Image (cartoon, rainbow, N blue to C red):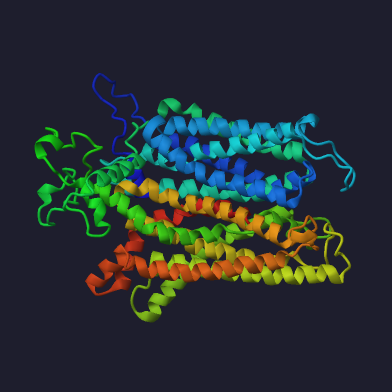
Amino acid sequence: MEKEVELGSLEGEEVSTQHIPQTQRRKGGFVTLPFIIANEALAGMASLGLLPNMIQYLMGTYKLHLAKATKILLLSHASSNFTPVVGAFVADSYLGRFLTIGLGSAISFLGMSLLWLTTMIPQARPPPCSHDSEGCKSATGGQMAMLISALALTSIGNGGLACSLAFGADQVNRKDNPNNRRILETFFSWYYAFAAISVIIALTVIVYIQDNVGWKVGYGVPAALMLLSTIFFLLASPLYVKNKVQSSLFTGFAQVITVAYKNRNLSLPPKNSPQLYHHKKDSDLLVPTDKLSFLNKACVIKNPELDIAPDGSASNSWTLCTVDQVEELKAIIRVIPLWSTGIMMSVNIGGSFGLLQAKSLNRHITSHFQVPPGSFSVILVLSIFVWIAVYDRVILPVASKIRGKPVRITAKRRMGLGLLFSFIHLVVSAIVETTRRKRAIEEGYLNNGHATLHMSAMWIFPQLILGGIAEAFNAIGQNEFYYTEFPKSMSSVATSLSGLAMAAGNLVSSFVFSVIENVTSSGGKQGWISDNINKGRYDKYYWVISGLSALNIVYYLICSWAYGPTVDEKVGEENGSSMEEEDSTELRNGGEVDKDFNNSKENGSKD
């Protein structure tokens, strides 16, 4: 993450001191951070507060069946995870981070306000009915259009808000400050601390309001929080450092592919002739690597007089690329197989079943208070925090003491461990659901999916904890893996890949959901997917996903073997002590990488 910060600051706004009074303050600095952190925390609280109970709103207010409501939510989650990639591209190439965040905040507010209006305007939703029957009117096309528009606007706005971390770091990243690294670490710590607090408040306080006060206030509060988030961010506009836009990596990738194709019949010069390869003046890469060598033809200088401008740059970037551009594209291509193994982490029933399952269990803490079903996701989020602390402060120090030398697990292996824990999480979920359904039938509730069983909600704690451990291993491992394997100029892409995997996982979940629904209900049979979770066979659904997860582990092992040793493993072998080198890598990158688990916080509502 720090590399992203450094990249974003290379072309930072220069504040000239000429003709400016000494008393005038330099732009940026800590004075801007409360506004940026407030923007992120309030926006996160608002957006996450909408998720846990959304399935109840769709099924109860809009009279949607579970299958349709789940598909809508999966597609909404997929778009919310994909738009940050688009937002980063727009911010870096066209609008800049300030405008992108400002527009994202405003668009999110519009989306949440529109959703709130569906609770306030009776004509915006189907008329209420006293019972579930054929007499209940379903939502009209106009009512569904209003609902989908609200969800779409919120997802689009989320893409702009995702730039807030890098924008905040731009305000305090001063290369001439000897304490620059420590200042950045302080900012990251406060940023993620408030982000974590916002998650917990969203999953507890806002969910409680929705369950006990109603949808009008329950959805009005997030809209109000989003308005405050937008106002706080814009208030400090004169104080911000606003960096200039930069060239896009995506454009560079297109140039490499185009030039390599044009030069496909060109012979590659020898590797000991760096003068025949075009590279940046300050670049450490003088010649391209041997892997994916067909792309190397994009940076071969055919005619120095025509290809190279007087300043040393390419006369036409669509006829000659740099070695750095070529290696950046190679890095993306190489990690795609390992990246795709993380898609399975987000493949699930859709987030809807977990809430309905918790709702059917005994959630009473006292005789007068019961935990809202949407708040159980906070267990998953807390388990991520606890596991990171235990792993870093207890397990690794004890293991190092036993072995007599520093012990670290490489990022690639942690990705694999995350997949393993995810598989165990799904198996436990299947067992718990089998037990819950059996109990429901024994108590005579087969035809009553709304009944509360004589079964404690504590039964679902193990699967939530295992899901949190899986996220802690895989999400953090992924971010560190991309951070160390990619060139410095690709740090913004590196931080987007986890979100892309989650988006792909949501789409795969939607596909698997549709296949299971269609196959199991063919011929007029009672399918696995049912509005009555006691009649449905969600236990079998979990077993299917568990099987896919097991196959994904095998696929990961193949991809890991094919990828070969990572950068830190290679250095460790050269130094004769892989474990010691992994430790130094952790010390360099662990602080920022561990905080990048923010990309996985949305999964706190997936179970």
